[in-house]
Amino acid sequence: MSDEKELQKVKGVPAPCDIFHDNESVILYLEMPGVTKENLQIRVDKDLLIIDGKKETADIEGKYMIHEIRNNDFHQEYTIDDTIDRNNINAVIKNGIVTLSLGVIESEKPRKIQITAG
Image (tube, rainbow, N blue to C red; front, side, top):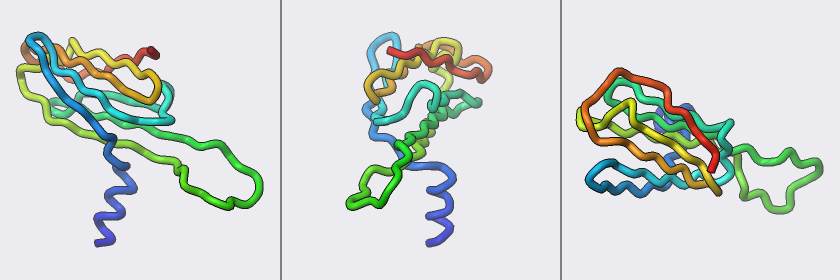
């Protein structure tokens, strides 16, 4: 049981996600409240799409009366097949929602995904 907790600490918590597709792309919507462009990393490594985000809360001076907002590390991994064009993946983050568009074509070499603010 403690191994599972350690793994979660290292990897982070999964972000709620919706995935759908049309004729040209696969679209992922991930909820990552409090994550900024600077604290978001998206990359492709062979057949894995890896998404990491870090939420940071403000430093508070004094004693908490209620403390429910936490710093979170988000981590998602998705296996992608050869139908995904690894050179045609776009990412936008706006209002805590990360939108990824994965073009459907042939696979290419791994590459880092550029993130733009929406």
